[in-house]
Length: 372
Image (cartoon, rainbow, N blue to C red; front, side):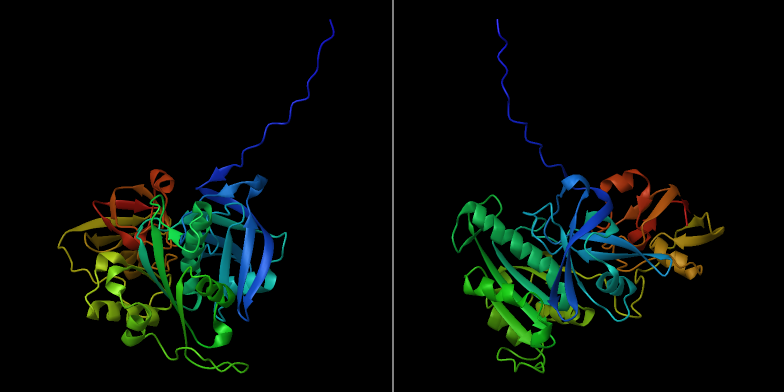
């Protein structure tokens, strides 16, 4: 009897996906967006994919002049392309990491990254009608959300109408973006294509002309009148805002004036106003001892004061940025004790289980010992 051999097709190797990455990303593509904004696309080891919600961010670590520096950058790509997570970075004259990325990173290089982090997402706050308000590089998380909705619409085959996540209902997007000049409009061609295709109602506001172009659209800053002109039904929409502190403050003032529901207004910024108070909470009258083990410093901390503010008052400078539990820059190890942590997506449950916490948004529930 002759054995019959049959060559079977090799089984397909399922793409490995992770929502908890901490390792090296390889740069596979660099795309200029504007004169000072560039997109960097990465690949995970082994061709794996990154599961993320649109609007989430990665913490990127690079070495600049022998010093390890961390910065948070929003993923600007769509979750529909998990194998090609992309960050879009504006060069900041005073930003060593953004300058390094622009000047030093080349295709084939690797960077350390962790994430995704963050709760600023349409996945966290789903709604049928959304209003995206951005200025400058604050457009990146909102573009990721828009791209996610566009890609989902293509999957659902709903034509020009965008379908809600699992709802089968059309979504209604109003996108307002503010830029200094026409040359500074990030993703301009894509915004114009979204508008032309009926996928979003787009308004772009420029403060000034550029040397090569006289801006023909709305000019100035985002006023209450401009807001209503772009979205007359703003009170019916879930609002997502991202941009510089001055822009964020103006939007907050506008929404307060028209009595918008605060529960439906979401914002994200990794930059605080210079001189903003670390904590404005009233003292509780109860204090606990906080020991910074490596520094050999023990101080009293009021139960209503954040650990980060206490460290600052003791002369310790822990790395920090947002001071609101968003960016994760101040992530530290709690050696003993318990804290009340009101974080906003800057730390993962796995890290909490490992004893990590965010001093910027944590108050002591008892005596603490911290590895700092």
